[in-house]
View 1: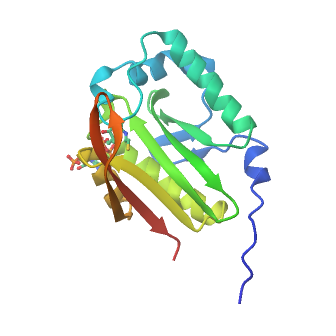
View 2 (view 1 turned 120 degrees about the vertical axis):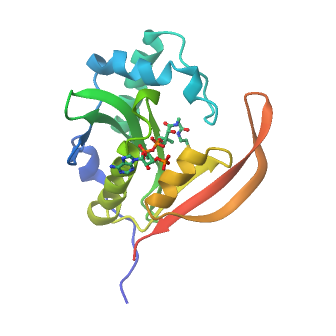
Length: 189
Ligand SMILES: CC(C)(COP(=O)(O)OP(=O)(O)OC[C@H]1O[C@@H](n2cnc3c(N)ncnc32)[C@H](O)[C@@H]1OP(=O)(O)O)[C@@H](O)C(=O)NCCC(=O)NCCS
């Protein structure tokens, strides 16, 4: 039987990975992306089901790009910018966090600028990130947590083959009210 040991992920943090699909490029964010990122994080109509509130200025988007770079440098998470290849705009982010090389598992988070919803971009990105995590990083399990009312996020998780494993009832307060969260997961076959 194969012995299960801690995965050495250091090579994934030597240089920021880039993943390419037909319509999208998942890549490192730079300060040049601040305006596009602010279009996403600054839109209060996209933050109903996430723990943060809309950014009030582009400077906070710049700070976020710095935080993402620091997190990568510290081997804590990989937050990809999602670039649309047709016009090179950053249309959202998809991140791998709570990375546990000991247990071969990680969590996935994602969001798109509202103007780009309904076109299948996030489904493409999440499928590719799951492939990357399983085939290249050799992860065994990927989790995603989303509020039970976040129907669009639930659909993305399910379209990408994730299964509902648990629901935590009213386990968080978000924007002044108790919210419940689903835990979705996919395990490598
Ligand atoms: C969650 C979120 C990324 C989902 O966005 P989305 O646009 O619904 O998801 P996708 O980009 O995968 O697009 C899927 C939709 O495009 C449609 N579509 C069109 N062309 C498609 C294609 N080529 N491939 C797949 N789907 C396509 C699908 O039918 C689907 O629409 P439906 O759900 O109405 O059936 C978005 O709602 C969001 O950013 N929300 C704010 C942040 C957030 O809540 N993040 C999640 C926290 S847990």
